[in-house]
Amino acid sequence: MGTARPGRVRTLFADRTNWDREEALLSERVAAVRADGGAVLDLTASNPTRCGFRFEAERLLAPLAAPGALEYEPLPFGREQARAAVAGYYAERGAAVEVEDLCLCTSTSEAYSFLFRLLCNAGDEVLIATPSYPLFPYLAALHDVRLVEYPLLYEHGWQLEPGALDARITERTRAIVLVHPNNPTGHFVGAQERAAIEALCVRHGLALLVDEVFLDYAVDAQPRQSFASALPGDAERPLVFVLSGMSKVAALPQMKLSWIAVCGPEGLRHEARERLEIIADTFLSVSAPVQHALPAWLAECGAMQAQIRARVAENIRLLDGLIKDTHVSRLEAEGGWYAVLRYPAVVLNEALALGLLEQRSVLVYPGEAFGFATAGWVVVSLLPECAEFARGAGFLVGAVEAVVAEARGA
Image (cartoon, rainbow, N blue to C red; front, top):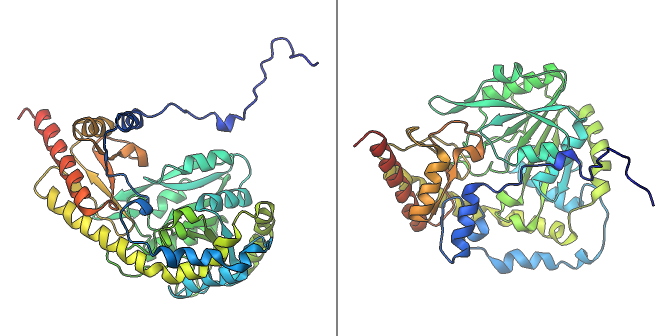
């Protein structure tokens, strides 16, 4: 038998998986309440399958029984009929995407994984907005990619400053990530912002990754332009990868189907497809029943989107009524299904969230969950059923008013 070398400690696990696994205090307290049989009024609920929406079960489940699903087709990018349905989804939104430029995946997380492997060597950098979704640091770490943050600014609405991105580009930068609209701020990338960022990518030879999972959820219900469509005029485009999927488009996260649309100049698209095909062929991760069902699901998704938009609109109306003439303000959002709330920074975000949970059994996101670095921020989901949402939001506003009054000696 072999023996360990004297003085040497062998590490079995990779450094990249040496995460801080200590459970956050807020999560511990939530688990304790539920373990004791208590109910939590959850204003972080963002799983559409558990928020009281009406799903047409028979219409959604019947396509999974397609006889063709019994045949194994090891196609790296997925079945052509399924990809044609995705191309049709984009055509309805004014974007021409070729079937050959679409790659099916099981999730947007897997799509990011494929693209980080396609574009980045170990230690390369990707620019990403803050505030943003907390999953990105884990995805980057798993692929030895370094995230470099650029700020989203709030001045009469959210906006990004292309100059701030330019200043963060180095020789190791490989790509810029945009979330359109951003989660949780709801910021859609404007036409001028988009033109400037695409020009920046062309100038520096960078790829552009655009996550559009919330594209169909504009607060004003007006269609927004996908990055899969070309800009007006003859401006040169970079290589663009557009990500989306059924988790948000059809409110079916459990069905595990997403996609990558490869856009931009033909030469770059061709090279990207050739390399991406080998990555996808290595995993072949999308199940046959889901691929067979995709065309029917996309044909039905409009009704579910309408339900969600109506719920979001009503909860915004309720929230705005509750915060009127209080110390809580809602930052303007153009899309998505979250609300960012600001309050006087007299108490830390986590302390406010913990107090709300302990005193009222209401759960909200402290701002740090999405990268807000200072006190005075909480985030709530707009998906909970309206009566529950109004009750929880009322408790939240009351908690803020109480801590502000205490801090000011009232």
